[in-house]
Image (tube, rainbow, N blue to C red; front, top):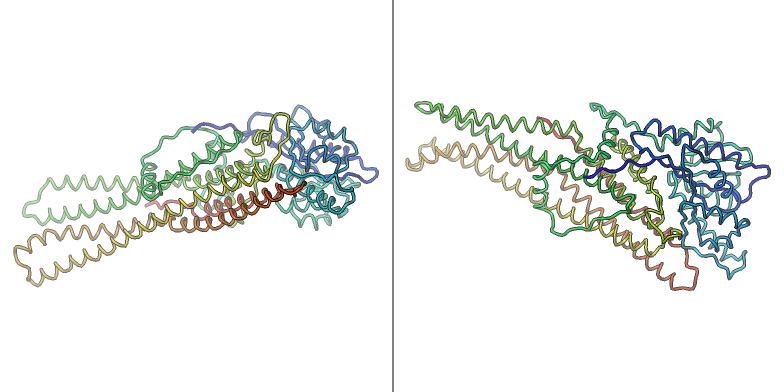
Length: 630
């Protein structure tokens, strides 16, 4: 495993303003201290949590539509306030090509718009088209523009960590600032409201805050902004669970993730790999490949997940095997001791045999105890699910950028379990990695061109790559875990019957011997076999218990059921993707303009991301078990 670089600290601000501001509003005067407060809060996090981030200068990005009025004022003010403490860049999300945008707006200051567009770090041009063959007030043209602006707002929110809005209290038009605010809060994007002309600044985190928060006096703007930025960027403090002391676990996780230390494969990992491959179908699944800014982190998370999953599972598998071996050694010791005690002249060589059997049994028990204690102390099970959660999050960034999204949705699971709450550390690490990526590096356009996400291409990538590979993965997992559960259960049942048969045979020998009905030539060998029947009767229940323990600890039956359920959900997504692709193809064959479809691909991608992340979040809460220490 190779080391990966710590992410550069970055924060993305989306801006939604008004084309016309109330008289007397000096928006630049209001925005300048707000941007300075955000920058100060970011640099404060850098000073406090430098271990999480690289030495690179913090980067702030302001994403807007560069429309007349507030957008252009905000972008200019943002760039003019840059200093040596942080890098400031702007970005633009356009609903149409620039010429069509200027026509459809209509853009009063097209020269300023193009100047700011030229200074943008990246530009996303959506697949809309303004109708020039219709009068400006035509209903059809107005409806298309509204859909385009709504799509623009949705995509812009997927490029941001905070939305800044200029709010004059009016309801606004469809797709306007008020609607954008509510949609942002609905997806968990916090909002900073600048209420004009009063100049009041409020931090809004929920829809309830928006609807009822105006009744209370707001906290000082600088303190509220600093708290919001810290919640997004600062290192979280995970709870200390009863009986555990993992308060520093998040530092260990981050240090390990960026450490890149090689760890040789232990025998227990090889044992689990060999065991699992006995049940796995032969077909291989092509791996996902993310864009260069994301791929090293995804590979690192995958490698660490495989390492700790193999350590944890190999430990309990070997533990159960050694427990059976320890019982076997104990029963052998009893047999040797009984035979030696009943002999006319004790064989002192037998005491050496007993000594070696005792040492072997003691070694097995000590190994089981130390291995279980090490697994629990080093949190192998929890690390395995943490890194799987991170890897699954980074997998979403293989596909969502094709649909113009750089803000994956959170999983649906409510944090009812401590494990889910502790994943805030992994979430913070994941978002730190994603936040630093310039979309132009993740989805590089031709030189000098904007990023143009197309619905047909995004749907093809999501369907054949993401949904298709997830279906293949869950089909293989379902088959593997179902075969493991079925064969282990079948073997345990067979051994249970064998135990009954052996005990019955032993009892029969005792009864026949007590009645003296056995011929002499048959009685002697049967009496000699009796201790070995006792040995078998003692070993087989231990083997049955071990097999059932492996079934329980591996959760093979429940994992098979979960994968079957995921297959059903993913097949539904596949049908939805096929329907959307047909609609896009149909629209593209009609006279222009086609309806804006990239948002449909974005919503599909987010639904897939939400379900796959939720499956991992729930899995980690349910299946992160500690090993029982003898």
